[in-house]
Image 1 (cartoon, rainbow, N blue to C red):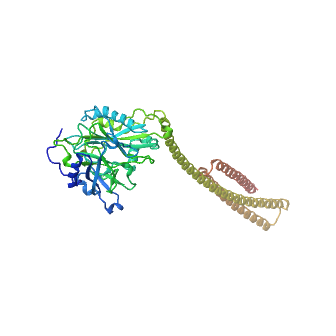
Image 2: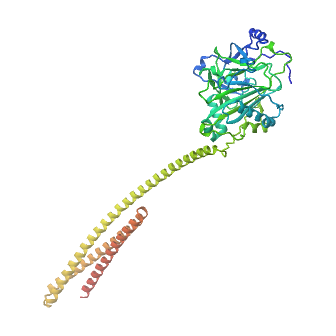
Image 3: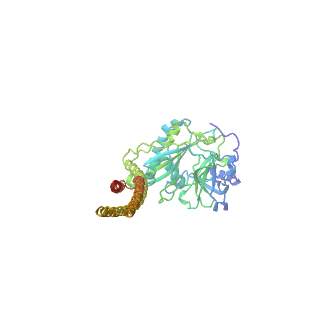
Length: 541
């Protein structure tokens, strides 16, 4: 145990005045003391700019913060001992935001973090269930242990100030919601639909407090604009960490403390409360130095433990006694993860959700169903998109089919034109055949003894007819070649259109075209054969 052997070092944030010495004289009888506490500076800057603090708050980070502090006016800190005829005053969490309770402990192994988790935290949970109304579930998440000879140990929080000599609140509504959501995950919605409180349990250890006490202000007398939200950012990365409340001085704060607070004198105070119908949702606090002449000679330095807990009251539809809770802080302590402040080490553990117990199963199922509904909504959007894409492809295919039908109709028109031309050729050939037959009959029936001149004329006429028949035959062959070539083109175009249009429609049109072409070929072959036969017959004659 370290004892006080020299004058106390001057604390930059504390302004000592001669009145404090006078207050020390008064404190020997009344125990009240008068001190100047440290507040946020009354600077117009904060009307437009949010306060920003760097954590851990070492000397080399001062230039990175815009938080400026100044001492307030001399204020009286009332000793709670004997107030209202009670050993530790008559205060309540909902009316004042704090209360002192007698809670002796037999625990002594403050240097063993695992044993704190195994033995001390269960004591605190029992104490909270006894002293806090509507305590359905308790979740310990942070601890600060300050022993002689060190700067203090902590888990999870990152504020450096070993004894925070600045009037403040540990959280604001923003950081409370963030902490609860991060720790409880899918259970957070259920817990926040009820009542959620953050309550600190502060206890001196080993010996009473003589040198540096903890002052607490009546939270029921705070104004809405007293607490200003201050963001805290990590010194190494500059990233956002959490928020705290900072306060400017004004007359009218009611401050209290417990003189020579002993190990059994436990302070419970609220750092936040979601209930809007209570007088005190939060209370201010700060460490302060006792006047020098009130400190006994050889008094040891302050040693203390502070544990922070989330206290939940379930909503009316879900009220039930809670089962055992596995606290994140327990894991940290059992593994010895409390680190010195200058290590800037963060401990993060997650809460077991206990969804397998009682009515919380329903709440977990509701959350699960909401997640499934979101997945289904995403699936519906995806399926709708796929359907729209399929409709677009179908419309494109239909347009291609219509185009193919137009081409096929054009080809039919061309085939009809060829048929017409072939019919004209056939008619011309038939006419020539009839004319030849008449000439032959006339020649057979006439006198065969014709003059030589007439015979030569007839012979010349026949030669001309043979030449004309040859020409017609050549034209017929050319037309047949053109028809065959056109038929091949039609087959090629039809084959190309089959893959683009509707297969059934295309196959039907292809059959029609092939049948028409085949029919025309047969007719042409028949006509050509007749012409050849006729020409051969004429030659023989």
